Image 1 (cartoon, rainbow, N blue to C red):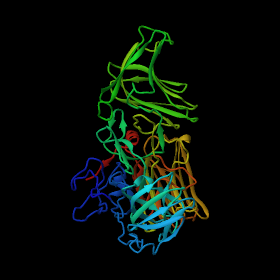
Image 2: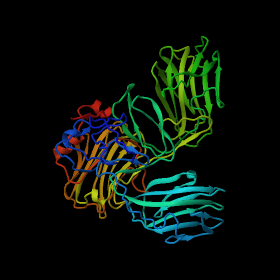
Image 3: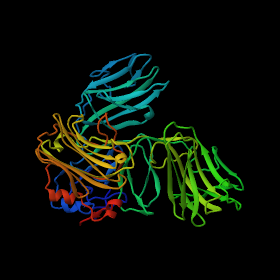
Image 4: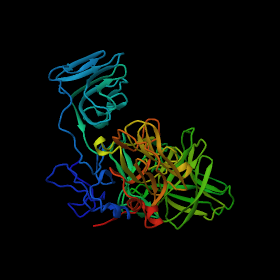
Length: 583
């Protein structure tokens, strides 16, 4: 973890990007202090927690983060000092390593794996299933020749290290077995590595992964790019106002098919007109865009007095049809009062009012789409429009995700994972409370947050189901379900405070201050609980959305505490997810 903690309290030196009363003590290198009896959280929640200091074993708020990790408060983040790899610098040749394949040699004190036709690898059986490890090694050189180079923990966790030539590979990885290996998995692949290290990580932090850059809205309300494997703390924009507190943003992989997202005179873009309309005039880099740079394009429409629906002036970008639902989006701002224009996604149109403030407009077409278009029609109220246009995006999917900038080719943002917080020491199989403040635009019905043993047999999980306007809560043990509640009538795009309490003959499900379901005649309990994840299991979809807080308590709280923990002071508080603090 980086030698800094993001926070907004009065302790230490405040950083701009976070909140929460965790803080950094310079005399205790890389240590997070546990929470005291002061809590910064949504109003109501802090009222419940202030009287229960340090009772959570896992507590994540969008506060401290570093490359590869979304930090929790309890227990402190810690990479154990014991090195598990023997002879990781290959000073003793290949002793202590098992190996197999075409050619494995020691070259200048490092190991070189050369594959011709057979899988070539080195390995040591040094791991424990369901534990997190920091894996590091130097990638000295590689000769690709279509080769793929993999590090694997157990049987399923694989990471391609091909892009790390000349650098040190470093990732936090959860193992599902005992086997650690590095191998060349494609014909003619050659790689040389040295100084291999594997150490256990004992902490409640989530292991975060995204193999690409991505964008977020920062505290100043500007869109900015964050680095590979760095969590995104996104500040919501409500009615044109940037909210003061962020949420952790998790999204699936998406590709922007528009190859020039902010250069409307570039290849692929075309201005056009029909009827009495005049081709619009486009001037790139005319105005300040939502990222704070002067890279927004000016688009001037003129229908020359036309009033027929056939009188049209437009700009258009054609892209390769995806074969699935496509969502188009664009940021627009008017330079001359409100403008009434249309946007198009495939054969679907939507009229929008473009004001003098930047707004993002989006539209999804359920059929195969091949274009994004901005149009001025003769029968609309506006005969002319003078707009700033920026951040054009077309993505295969049933809803719009965060902006993906492009400058000459399509760009893919990788899917994000945030998994495996805690260990078996942090959870209680007999009783406890799982709490989350979450929202999601993802329409999939398996939008899940999991507390489990890594299997489908022992799990406690919460589902936001936007397609059915419902929120679901489940508790399952090996003998079946103790609790299975579906509560309907919720807009998943709003923030909701949700929790599950479990204890033998005492299970309940709470949403926004109300108990919506309970079970008092079951003794089924999960066993072996050891990880809290946003990705559930391999059989179900991950949670994609925004998280203001997620917390776990090792004891079952009282009903009054559960009510306070999930309550909102007003509907507006729920809609914005505004957070408050008690000092």
